[in-house]
Amino acid sequence: VSTNKEHKGYDIVVDNEKIEVKCSSKHRGIPDCFGSEFDQNNNLIADFLYIVRVNNLIPYEIQILSREEFNKYSNLHNKKTIIKISSKLKTDLEKNKVGKAVRL
Image (cartoon, rainbow, N blue to C red; front, side, top):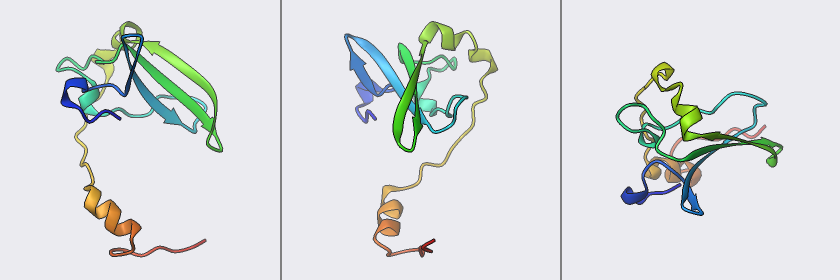
């Protein structure tokens, strides 16, 4: 994931092509995206969207959508606001400083 504001909206660059990568354990569908991956018109910023399908954490398929293919549907996308959970809370939960874990 790129945190550089100059590279907003995509994860990696290969041969000057911007690529956004999503992983899913589901056989179909597209994982939800972040608002930062789109421009003000709900168009994908990256040149390509790669959807990596995994089974037991092992990739078995990559589906590739071009920006042009994806953006043909941009008027149908629903924009929602999300709350980004603080990394401090995530760290404190991992270190058992807050919350509790139940082993199964």
